[in-house]
Length: 100
Image 1 (cartoon, rainbow, N blue to C red):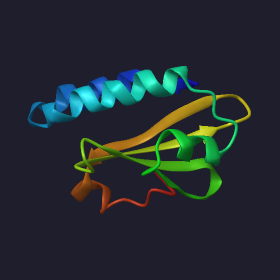
Image 2: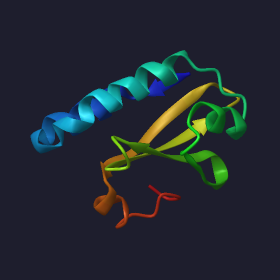
Image 3: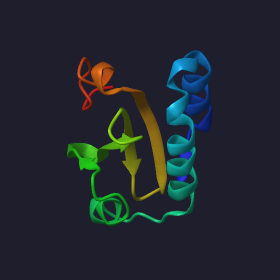
Image 4: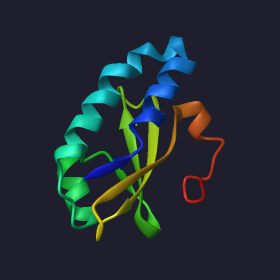
């Protein structure tokens, strides 16, 4: 999968030095997804069983033991993952994952 954009993850980590415990889990997620080939939401669930698959290609990943949430939009046909949101669980509760 092609991930748009790694810089979003790095910017999040740079802007929030207190969230350093998210660094390794986020980078591990990135490395795993970069090697993945997802043709459907079922493939996502096979790789990340705790991921929440929403409608219209949205997927929510639990990062660092569910302390952080990562929302992406997956275009299965073009093998692209677009990062839409990364934040704490509390910050996630304030957004609409379907529209970010």
